[in-house]
Image (cartoon, rainbow, N blue to C red; front, side, top):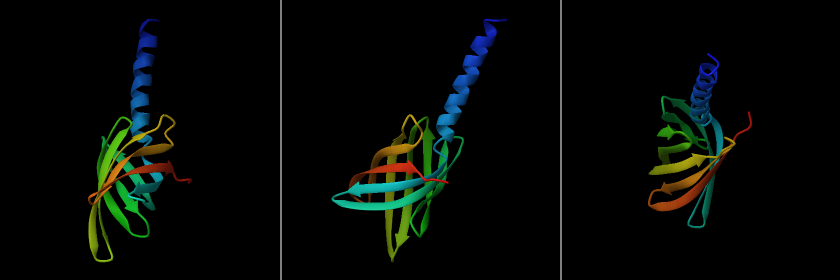
Length: 122
């Protein structure tokens, strides 16, 4: 029985770690994007359900997020409408080991760039 308990504990710990990684992306994030000498900031609020990433991103106007999470890697798209113009944004990034930052690449229309996200204080 002693051999079973450590093995069982390891399996439970592994399952909890995987859940924590997916769950740690959920919440409020500050977003900074850079491309072609331009910079833009905003925020995102993420929820996760069975690997599906949803929520909103934006500034004063909020836009729906459609994406996915696989461990610490995530990707999502946002369609925006502002001032009569429409645009499509795509993001691919990875959550850091501490669960406090996400970094990756983004496209805004036909412009490629990078982004950084940090957890927003409650």
